Amino acid sequence: MTDPVAEVVSLLKPSPSISKLVTGGGQWLVERTELGSPFYCAVVEGHCRMTITGREPMLLTAGDFVLVPEIFSFTMSSLEPPPRGALAQRLETSPGVFRLGDPEAPAEIKAMVGHCAFGSDDKALLVSLLPEVIHVQGEERLMMLVGMINDETSADRTAREMVLHRLLEVLLIEALRSTASAAAPPGLLRGMADPLLAPTLRRIHADPGRSMTVETFARDAAMSRSTFFDRFRREVGVPPMEYATGWRMALAKEFLRDDVATAEIAQRVGYGSASAFSVAFNRHVGMPPGAYSRKGAVA
Image: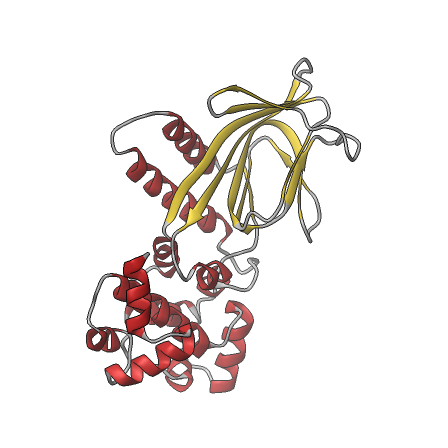
């Protein structure tokens, strides 16, 4: 059975960037701005405060895991941060191991921290389907996965990059699994937690080439058109046809990067002809398929 969450993660193409072990003592603060990259943190021991711009501060304690699919500005600090303007104390004690704050003070936090990148050209669309922040407590599997990523990053083993890519995919899926419920914010996870909408989402992903209309979706879900439309938009965050078109175009970009012929792509993603697909692609992406394909070849 098609799993939309796994497909989204696979299409995001997560790749490793930074993974490090951090300890901190005394008063310390780390501030990052304008990153625009995925960030995760697993607290092994102790506690700290994390503040993401525009959100309430979070108290993180041992066993907490945080994943932010696209983070721009945030701070992490001791519970009592240093005065504003104080010189940050940060020491790399060994490769990939950092000490924050007073090096003589007892360690009050031990955490594994990492950044990664998404290689997809459609990452904005795909990230928009995920929660803005995932905060999970007491999930041993997540802690083990972060530990494996940290270990693999610091080693020089055969097939290291491939292993890291796979571990990151599993970490993302495991984090999303832990959040998949009706309490999740509007998006793919909340839609998949809805027993009346999940079959529709699976059909969109399983067979993007089939004819799709709101009427057929509603009929399959045994709802009126207006009830289905309102429910889908409320739970997934976008109207059903906007979601279907976005997914089709994300797939089309992948096919173009793989040098699949335009006529075949049109058939695979549900357009009656190459010309109809080209018009839709140009409207959605801002350039015709041929230009997009050539752009990818140059890159």
